[in-house]
Image (cartoon, rainbow, N blue to C red):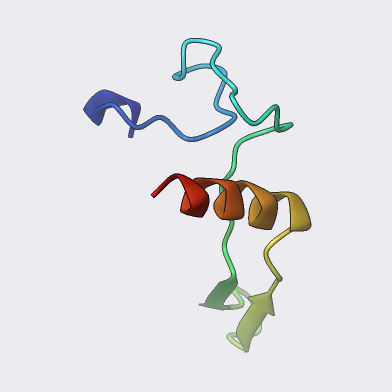
Length: 65
């Protein structure tokens, strides 16, 4: 994303040290991941809600539009 001018928020390597939202770590999130377990071949589904600090950044960005 940085290559096209949109680095991931919180990515200190490719954002030239910019962190306008003062977040810890990269703002990457998978709401849902689905895969087959490598040993049992059982279908695994893992879900996680969006963290509150992600929601706050998204709300701030929405207000800028």
